[in-house]
Each structure stands twice: as structure tokens, then as C-alpha cells.
Length: 256
Image (cartoon, rainbow, N blue to C red):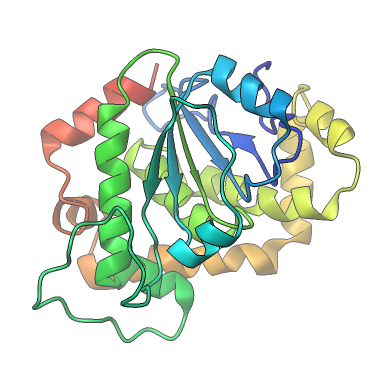
């Protein structure tokens, strides 16, 4: 597979690369390191082999165990699968998340994007995701994170990942809104070509103006951090348990 924003993975939903996005300090995210997607249960045998060749190493599943059971991911044999459900799960369900402390309080937020930022289980899921990101240090080894549609849970995960790596919020929002562009476009091959050429930025900006209302939901996640923690640095330190050394390591692993 080539360096493309939307990867041609047959049977996938909203399968995208985060490689190539620029950061505020003049670096960019490495290709073949960070992938985001929706449902992976319908991948063809060829697609599974292509992902193996692409270096897929971690599959971070943000869905509930029930969702994952109904539509099981199709993956290369050596991929490390993690069940990190973002939303609270039933007592009868099990995942790869450690037990929450007994004194963990639930967050009273009506909007799901604020809940994903503040709920103890959501924070734990993203915290574990960052730990796997730190372990994914081999060159050309990719970490994939996904939910069902690759929009909400995946969108917030992408927001946190791109933020911690130093990508500006307007560009993060562009990546988020790209999900709406993908779902509104029947001709995926044409969309891939438009996102590869020199006019890609103009194309995305045009689409952003069309889907601005849907994109505003990500603002709620961002504002939840600022209202409750004051700034990103405090959120990543207190909620994600990332030290200064961890932040430096993440940038060393994923930026060039």
C-alpha cells in the first residue's frame, strides 16, 4: 500500500492513515505507524495479507465486548489484539482493561464526547491505548485503533493521539471531519486521488465547510479538557498518567 490518507483495504470501513500530518514544531507523523478505522469484520483474505505486509502490530478495539463478539475483527495472525471498551460495559462482560479502583466515580455528562473525556473507564481505555503506543517502538510497526464506524470513539482517540503528538487543533478537526466526507462519497477511489494531489488541502477545507456542524461535536471533547483540567498538559499527566519522559518517547516513536 502507498502513502495514502484513505487506505484501500477491501472490506474495511473508513480505514485511514495518520501519517504525514504536520506538528506545531515542524515535524510530521511517520507513515505506517498509526491507523484508524471502523468495522474490521468483513476484511477479505487479501486485505488481511496486505495489513500483515503493512506491518500491523497492535489492534486497539474501542468497542464493547458484545460489539466485538458480534462482529469479530479479521486480523493477521501475529497482531496483538486489545479490548479497551471506551463506554461502560455490563458486569457480565470482560475486556483487557484492568479493574477500576473501587473509589472511581462515574461522570455525570449528558454528551457522549464529554463523557469519553471524563468518565473513569473511558480514561482507562485511552490510558491503556497510550501504553501500547509506547510499546509500539519498532520501525514500520503500525498501531490501529477503531470502533464500529470509525467516527465517535475513534474520533476522540484520534484527537487525543494527535494532540499529544503536537498537531494543531484545526488540523485535528480536519481529520475528524474527513469521516463525514468518506461516508458521503460513493467513489472511494476518486476520493483517495483527491486527497493525494497538491490540491488536497483545498478539497478538505471545502468539505469542512459543508460538514462544519457535525465537526463541532469534537469541540465538546476539547472543551471538556480545558474546563476540567485547564490545559492539555495537565490532562495527559493526570488522566492519561503520561510523564514527561513518556511524552518525549511518544514523539520519538511517531514523529520524524
